[in-house]
Image 1 (cartoon, one colour):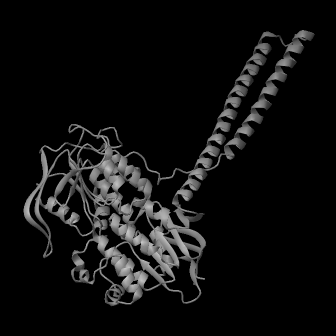
Image 2 (cartoon, rainbow, N blue to C red):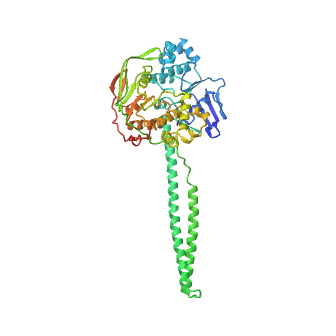
Image 3 (cartoon, rainbow, N blue to C red):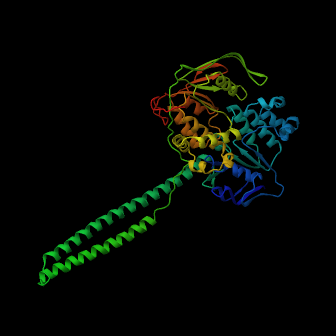
Length: 523
């Protein structure tokens, strides 16, 4: 039986940026989900397990010796040799995989124009064809339409080795894993069962910690009230003793006077001892309060400036065809999108959704204030985002970082990165930064191509609520049907407009707070 073991693994990008600390676990055959907030270290851990990144501490062992490991990273820029081997193979397993994943060898001739979802199917199919002992998958369902997702899950269900899958896809995390590894604050905890079971377990743990903290704080407040009462009693006793001393003469030694002095002195001393005892009790109560740090990954409500577009039409295209390179992707394209519309562009992988977005953006006015988020951000684009953030005036940078924090990432950690560490931003963190930079600029429209890719589950839920309340134009490409139903009201499919099923009412009461043009300050 194959075993994958991590023993005391530690990784740090710099002395100020530890990522993983003393990570230890043992994995046996079956799928294991790897979850955590954006930037928590999931991809870093996957690279360590794959052998592509040497940890600063500890080690990873796959047993028996010679066990093979296949790693499928998030992005697929160029096809590897294993892809061409799969394409040219016609044996039983290769034929089965190509059938299950709907892979056509002719697609490789136009690889640069393939959609990310089409490339992903080839990447994972080639990895499965190698029959590895360990299969490491980083966001395998990103970019996949519902049909392709079902095909992939069916193929993965037949894998009999050790599988580790990083995913923010709730359907994947409920169907595949037998256990969940959670990366949080540099540590990894293992929970048996599917994602919903693991999520309930750590939510119960967090709730218990919060309750214990609240009880301890309540106990502190109770002792503080007792100390205040004891101090008031001591003050009253001291005043009584002082008053008695002033009223009586030095030679007034009758029994009644002497008794009053003794009683007043005793009361003053007793009150002083009580204050001391309660003060010590307060010190112990404060020491018993369990430490609880604010989880910066929780995030909060997202507020963004908004300014209504002065033009009633923001996007318009009327063209006989739209090309991707030399290939005609769409024909007879007629699309008009108004400033208040909320549009989903839908279709299968390779249908031309991203190509249509590119054409719409190219046709808009140059001065239109549009936030565009592509499917993937290159390293150069990430470097540019970080440089742009650092160049902003202090007040503008503060607004951007507040949105970044609300999306569930730590601004202090971002600012602590040196220029050479910009590429260490996770894809999810980079997308959050792009959103934060755009949302602080009073956008008239949001054009989002698979915005939930790479985002952790809490962030997806916050973004969904935020877009529900955003009053401007939204143009969205997504394979997440629930996300689309919540955030759009009309669907464009193959150039035909249809009403979305059960659209939710729009409104300005969501986490996005619309601001008037008078409140907005520049682009």
